[in-house]
Amino acid sequence: MSPINTNDLNRIFEKLDQNGDGFVSLDELKWLLETIGVRASQDELQSLVGKKSLDLIDFMLFYDTIIKQNINGDDELEKDEVLQDNNLENDLAKAFDVYDVNGDGYISCEELQSVLSRLGFWNEYCGQDCRSMIKRYDMNSDGVLDFEEFKNMMLLTNS
Image 1 (cartoon, rainbow, N blue to C red):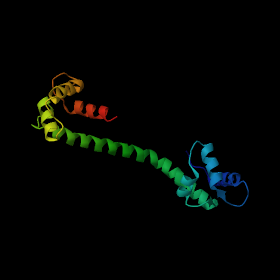
Image 2 (spheres, rainbow, N blue to C red):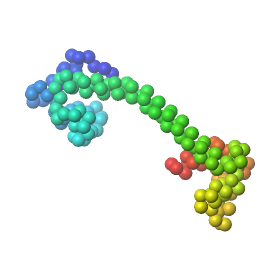
Image 3 (cartoon, one colour):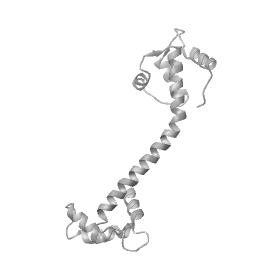
Image 4 (cartoon, rainbow, N blue to C red):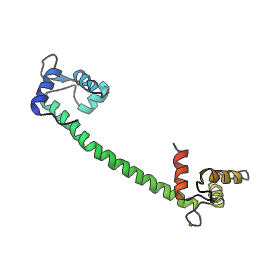
């Protein structure tokens, strides 16, 4: 969405103000937004705008807000995604450390069994399950999970 000059905004406002009362109602604003592909309910618009109708100045402020959000929104979304990725990576690293009991950078079947036992999730039938779980995600077939394999396992099982 590129910025529109003031004259064009005036013309848009006048066209939207179908009854000529000097205000753009939420219905008229909703029609405009739907025309450009933005779906919003009447309640959403009212909470966003804070009024039942906009005069020309309010309309211009509303437009400026949308433009600024659109311009900054892409950068903000990218920053948010990077932060979320970093937070997820940190959380997974902490979880990996819990399972990597001896700190060697790998999760063995015995370590997995030990942690599951401490958490109350292990019984005599789980031994085979630990081996099959590790085997399922052990991409290099070394019998243990490294961090990348653990991360893939966690992301695949949580999707």
